[in-house]
Amino acid sequence: TASPKLDLFLGPLAPTACPGAAMPQQRRRLRRRGGLAVAAAAASAACACAAAAAATCCGAWAGHVGFRLSGQVLSYVRGRAVAPLGRASAAEVSAVGADTAAADSALSAGAAGTFEEKKDALKRCLAREYRSFFRPFEEEFYSEDVTFKDPLNALEGKAKYRSNVKMLSGESLVGNVLFSDGFIDLHSVEGVPGEQQRLTTRWTLGFTFKLLPWLPQALFTGVSEYTIDSDAQVLTQRDYWDTLSLGRNGAYSPEGALAGLGDLGEQLLPSFLRRTEEPPAAVNGRWALLRRAAEYRVYRDVKDGRVFAIPAPGVSSEDPASSLARALREHGLAPGAALLTRPSGRGEVTVVEAAAAAAADRAADDEVPGVVVERPHPWSGEPPPE
Image (cartoon, helix red, strand yellow):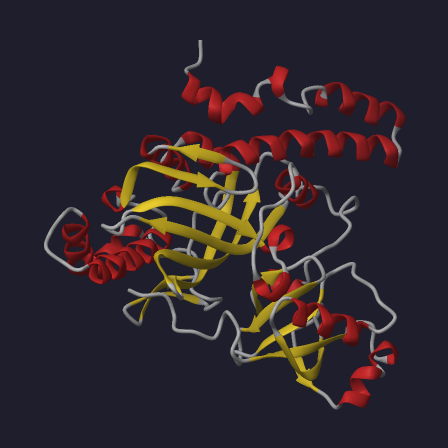
């Protein structure tokens, strides 16, 4: 009999618990009958199963096993490029930050220090944990009763949190079976003005789900909100996704029931069933995804650092420029100069006159109108601490 802990991770993969358990029969019917409708049914069933498995096994940041810093091509520690994108090893991170980590750990474990010093140590801890894929998980910075919640999961207690991050870091069989090509771009680790016992991180997450034969990639952007105690230990962590929870002036609110499973499930569909596809320039790394909102995307041009926005894939409007500007303003962003972008080619981003932008519907098929996102914006601050 499986233990409750194994059931937590493996339950959705069992035939009795999996909506896609009838896949062999569906494949036989597909071979006999053919047709798009049967293929769609089989793919949807597989995705329902996969989404359930991923939802249970993802936990904090849904399966990230890599690290990138704000879309840069290399990972950086103390200003030094240590490895290609997403491949910085725990040993490399530890080697350049061991002294700082030891001092921070001593502060958290009870060494003399002010609250602000301990809070700064926690910020550095969070940045290290992202960079090293939680190898190690610095558990002295977390309360025994720490809680975690995101659109897919809810966990209580340090033991469950520890088990979850071990899975995410690739130290469990389940994580290695389910996920590959994972990464997280850490954009910031910041305090909350006027609230001393809160911290916020902002990130972009992506991973490939290996159980489906078409190997879909899922992408998420959002924030993690932490509450901490008087010793700067983490009491709660609440994750929000931009697609589900981003509201007026950039504030976040709880998502609807099952919304996270729906977002994940749609991304796991094969391309012929998916309503939208992310631009090739974003997939191939020429653009770094900063915000995946329902109506628009915000990217950083890796070549020149420009932050800009374009309509989300599949979003159409009679006046796309006005609709885009309105959506940005609603979320507290300031639209600037008009752009023409080429998401399907080399990812060129060109500032154009307003008249040319208005005529973008007569431009080449691979051109998409957009706007510069003016500073200050959530991605214009200092990089995460070391």
